[in-house]
Amino acid sequence: MKTITLLIPAYNEEEVLYKLYDRLLTVMEKVKNYGFEVLFVNDGSNDNTLSIIKEMRNKDNRVSYIDLSRNFGKETAMIAGFDYANGDAVVIIDADLQDPPELIPEMIKYWEQGYDDVYAKRRSREGETKLKKLTASLFYKILQKTTRIPVQKNTGDFRLLDRRAIKALRKFREYERYTKGMYSWIGYNKKEILFDRDPRAAGKTKWNYFKLADLAINGITSFTTAPLRFSALLGAIISLSAFFYMIFVIFKTVIYGADVSGYPSLMTVILFLGGIQLFSLGIIGEYLGKVFSETKNRPLYFIDEYNDNKVRNE
Ligand code: UDP
Ligand code: MG
Image (cartoon, rainbow, N blue to C red; front, top):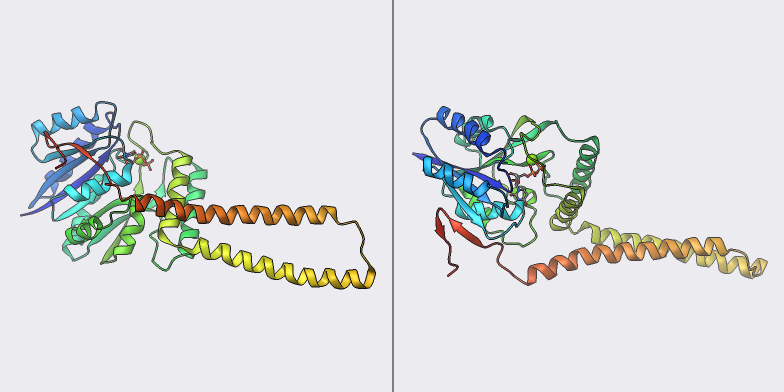
């Protein structure tokens, strides 16, 4: 019998866990002929998330969990889950029921047809503000323009991955993670299914615009080096125009003589160039920062407990 791991990163999700478990139970009962492993990754929650998970595990031995030593963020929680998942396929699903578990049977159907990555694409984004929708679409546009790897628009982490895709993803040990880029990077047979994303069932989103901007910058800089080239190109264009302007100024001075006016134009040019230099430095800095955190080569996470056992870090 094949087993399917349901991988659920959870950070302060006490309000939704029972509801989630109920919905998962219904789905697991419907899908016969498969074993299930419900793998929670407790990402350093400071509410009752862990004790609720333990309580579920006592009643249902399909439930297992890893408890991270602190909050590492969803991206890291997911790689921890990949490392510990035992199933022949893994379904990544958010704890807050924004990803409807009822889609899992369909994912399994396509998996059985030979697809390695069955990802759910959002038809609508209910419960999200206009601004979030706008920034999201802008982000995807920029990302797709700057890379040759196909970007999956409006898809999240909600997907079924075959074991070989999981094994591939385990090899990505980079510290600043953008998992959505990795799914595209590894390739394999992909299948898209559509769904309507529900609003969060309860609790609060852990995202804010700072985190979102962080993920967006991280997404672009870990996916492509196009911004570096862009700043070089911008520099080239500006110096070229400056060169022609210089020739023009020289001739003008020779023919008409020098005048002292021109302070405003001088000021704008200086400020403009100063701005561009800082901007380009910032871009270089982003990549340099990446190099810095990757060269430290730290472990990605530490685990406090795995299925009722303390992990000792040998
Ligand atoms: N999550 C996590 N660690 C974090 C933040 C979030 O494991 O530091 C989990 C969270 O419990 C949920 C999923 O990641 O299962 C998505 O988080 P959230 O719903 O807050 O994000 P959104 O759906 O708003 O993008
Ligand atoms: Mg959510």
